[in-house]
Length: 191
Image (tube, rainbow, N blue to C red; front, side):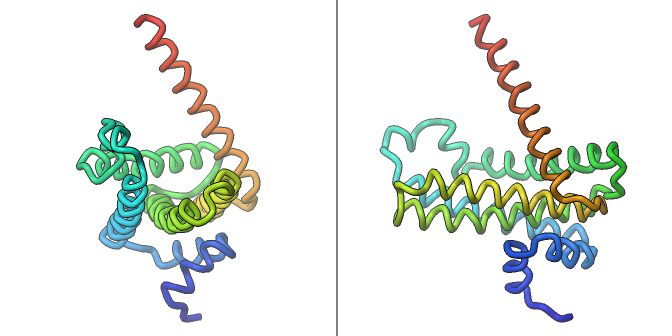
């Protein structure tokens, strides 16, 4: 079956497990994976820049907002996040009996990053057209993003149950959040 890149991107949103099977079947090399990562980051940075124009001037100068923008630090953080998530998903997945290796999982995480950046376009348009509904839209897009990630992780590790992978991803995200909250609260308690 010959499909275009546009068809594959669309299938990522409507049939993510099938899209994951197809994309991971391509056995992408590192140059292609790096290109997918760079494309996702470029789209994300463009969206961030447009959203920053809508911020009040005082917020645009905030160091955290600048870091998320087009600064080298923001790009470096995004690249580091892709490889950190890839390593964690590889190691945790293998600990639970998965068979994915780092290149295969990185391909999955990179593609999901690109898909998430494309969902960011929906968020951007919604931000300007339907601001009152964006809370609900963002929750729905977040759940869709989690499901897409779960499908790609399940396929990368050859797990049979995507819902179990989604539950595990959500559980680990909550655990990491709680640990980081504890670290931050301990760090600010001495200040």
